[in-house]
Image (cartoon, rainbow, N blue to C red; front, side):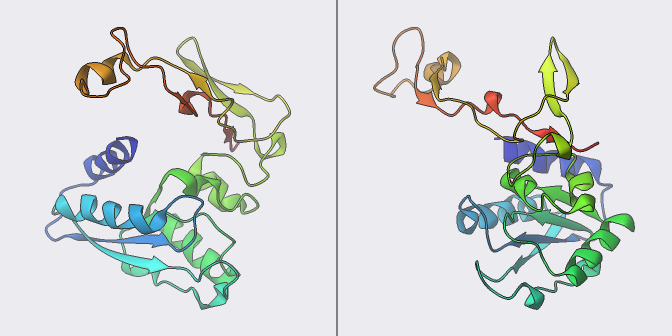
Length: 202
């Protein structure tokens, strides 16, 4: 759902083109299943009729990153579904030039975990976590009383917090066949994304 809303926002922000815009999804490594999500991303974008989508896949873990040299300038928007080692300095420079020259960029889910030591990338994503980020990467960005506030407290950037039970009453009403749904709602135990703490790049 979150992914679909993100892509819908991207589509809404673009003027209607006379011809489909060229988009490039970058994958190849990720702590999530990019082999399943990349085809879904491609389909969602192409189903709008606004995009033609190519995929650039990096070498696998331990591979030679100098071989990864997509022609970013051929595209209007880049979508990163990548969370792995740094690209070559040449590819990093091409990526930065693409964005500085007005190219679009969307970081999908764990792609904002990548490249903690790459300053320009951290400026592009705005908020990131994990991969060694801490207070030196920027303050926490917390929602307090309906407003976002900066919290400079020391600590790691990125955490799902402890697993805990929470009520999914609305979901249970729409999934009546779920056998464990009590009358007043479900209480599964999982990682709550509301407990996620990320660092804002300043």
